[in-house]
Image (cartoon, rainbow, N blue to C red; front, side, top):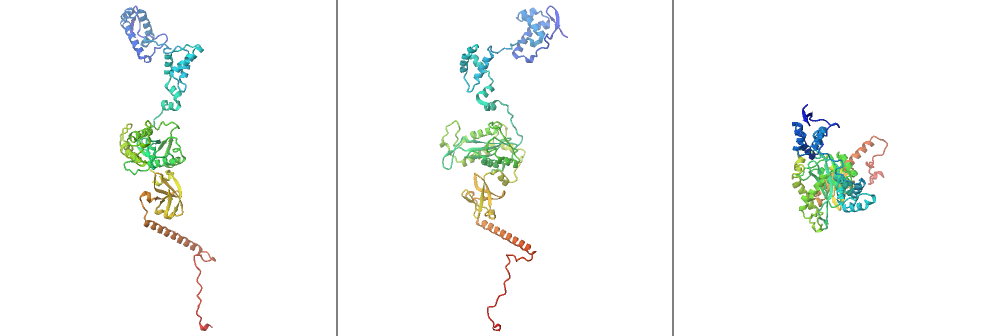
Length: 506
């Protein structure tokens, strides 16, 4: 072991464990204290390593010999870390009764919150009554400022604000398109003109693919969201779009929504079971986890609606005369922005265009077997109707299709999109039979020739059925004896009597 000269020529180890045992780790010493320990060691170093008398080392270091001997004893006990200045255990603690400090904290945590001046005035009145020293205003402010921000948030703003601000959350990420969709509604900061010329604020429903940030579908409605409008928007999201530039479609693996009644309906649960789609709901009153679609609503307002006449943000006066677009015009503007701007713009978080990310790798979505199956599941606007000779009567309109010729007098169920009354989907005993068209709305006419051909075909079918039934009865009755002739067979005519008399007979 290396030896060094200590004091008057005595030799001692360079490091001796103190009587208390192990030295304090240097890593547990604050940076400022480590610098002080290094400076003290530099003063002792000539004595420890070169054998310089401790008195001379202290003189060169400009400290007293007594101080140098104290440092040397500390170094022997705990090496370099023992040279660091020791902090008091009560350093930073205020010399006041614990009950007085707790009272100040309790007053500061009351709701509604009290000002520091109010807390100080109340403490000035209460402290003498309990024999406590009266703290200064500055001390009261320091105690209030030292309170845990989470504790103050919980006391002053409630558990909901505390949960949104301070509780730990796990951010959900998905690995492929259609793995998870988010859906939500919001009233727009926008005024449109209704058909009677009055301004109104529409509601926007959005369905977002979490992986690509692409919009699967949207819906604009003047009434508050309900199960019917939600089902119609989900149908648009799942089925292929008529616009070839909008490719997002398919059945999602997870449909993530809030706890609204339109999303938690029994019908939507049945639809999810049939489509093998898992429903996930956020906690009631806690929108966390749906941040992507919340940010998308802000993007719609800032980048689409703000450039249109009728935009009325909440921080500006909402003047009814701002509404200049109809609901149809707003729908066209929003569709154009989604397809040509939002889907083609590089998203700052995924650093890709949403349309490219959704279609990357030749992704093929899982689709329903047919649109009729999807309509039967989702279009909850269903009404019973009777098929009349001139078609189906609904909404004061008349709907026709040649297929209806075979169902005159039958009760059917019509399903329709509330925003597109040009056609009805007609179901008979839960089986899709046709799409009935309203010529006045669809611009499509059913010709008289088609109607006559359908009537003749149905008549021929009915006659054939009568012939088949009659033939079956004849075959059954032919095997039985002693029965009168079939009702459809007339008895043989008797021989005709002569009306002209013959003389030979007289």
